[in-house]
Amino acid sequence: MYDRRVQLCGGRAEANNGLAMWRRLHKDFAGEGEVVEFAGVEVLREYGRCNKLSELPGHIDGWFELLDHYGKELAAAPKMTRSMFLNIIPKDLKNEIFRERSLVGADHIRLADWCRTRASVLQHETLAEIVKKNLTGFSRGRINAVKPGVDANESETDVPPPPQPPHLAEDVPVLGQGSHRCCESASSQEDKAG
Image 1 (cartoon, one colour):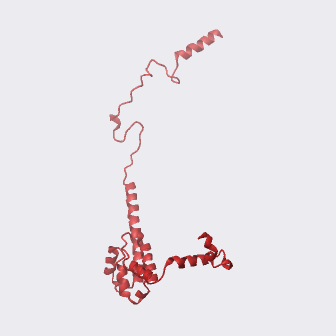
Image 2 (cartoon, helix red, strand yellow; image 1 turned 135 degrees about the horizontal axis):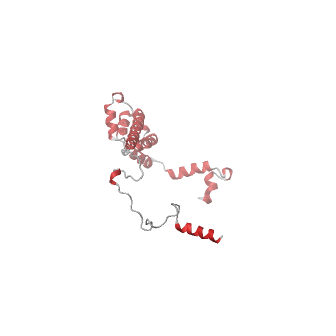
Image 3 (cartoon, helix red, strand yellow; image 1 turned 60 degrees about the vertical axis):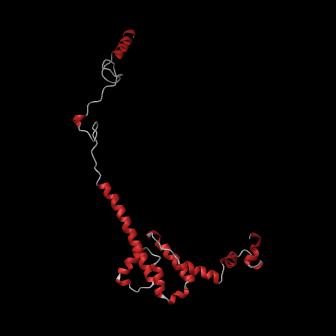
């Protein structure tokens, strides 16, 4: 394809014209004719149902793209397009549409707008419930004051004092606590020598 780029652009006069090359490639590889048209109509007719609210707007957009490209004749058949549209949305939304008096006889465009709005509302309600659940979990948590030497599960009287480490026996002096004979004797020997 790189070697053909000049010819794909339309000759030397249009060299480096990427838009012309794109048009030519699209024409060569997009396909046309009755077979391609039949395949597009078949895909439109068998378009699947969306079951996730988060994917519904994109699903509807994909269906409308196919309808615009392959279903131009269906513009004259609003009941058919309504029926096709009702078969691509989640069953819960379809049931809500049947219960909603204002949507009786509505065309597929009005139903699509309603579905997008309703899906957005339902998603926000779901997110609000999740946030509410998280917030109530935090506020219901019990917070206990921390006291030195007291475990939250035990009372103060149940906690015995920690045992004294064996290397700190009572007869062994600890630096920084009281007077020490070893320090006094060293200082008195200095006084006698001095």
